[in-house]
Image 1: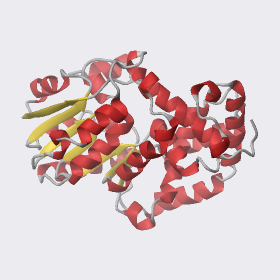
Image 2: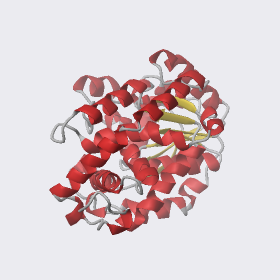
Image 3: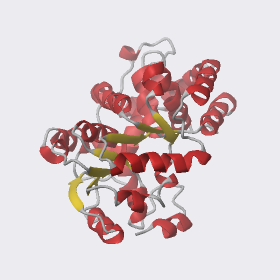
Image 4: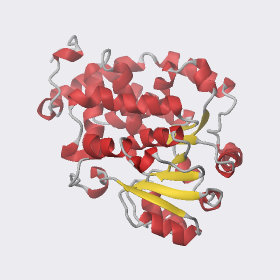
Length: 333
């Protein structure tokens, strides 16, 4: 395999992408990508200085919760999504697959394999898959993204660590989030409320109160017991449960049913989220595809919060590295 190859020249199969030589070429490309760091640093300086609604700082937590309360109590349609390393991998594919084909392919394959197992979208579906995420970002009112410190740390890792030391997919994903925002217009960016990637952890203690301002609570989840548990714990008016297959990462195997495109198309082409009541708030725990579900719910006049793995925590389940026993104990309902 040659560094001069175009994306169209690369065989995007599991057998090829998982070869050691493929990872070596991806590593070479990430070093090349890191040479553009000064551009991203200047962009981040602009974001930090000029975006009025930059609520990504810890001291902004109360302002963020107040804004959410205003939206929910007035039934104002909105979408709150979070962009972490997984979303960063998808965005890196969308914006950089032509310039860094090995790195983009390596990261895209591995994140989809983690999330979907053997049901992962094939390479000929990657463009369409990534477009759903971009559309969700453009339509979002609140965007959780890695902090400047997290972004800078991963860029430093890329610049300094050797191949055996570098977590290539994760590091590329984290820097891929903020670097992708450079493709938004200044006006579009100024209309967003920026917050932390782990906003679901940040507002966990405030959510029970926030939910009571909604007329109805619905969920998109792999857990049929989630909504009844929320209803009992928080005394809310229950709406509907939209079930999806679990993530392969969470069950350490390939789910029985296919989320994308099968279940995804069933959901977006049905009344499940296309018939939303005024004042209905959806709590969405649906991984990479959940961002687009949030977007559709907003367009239908509803409200949507991407709660991610907080749904697992509420049920007492630890599915992420940061799900320490103390965090589970404090937030299980």
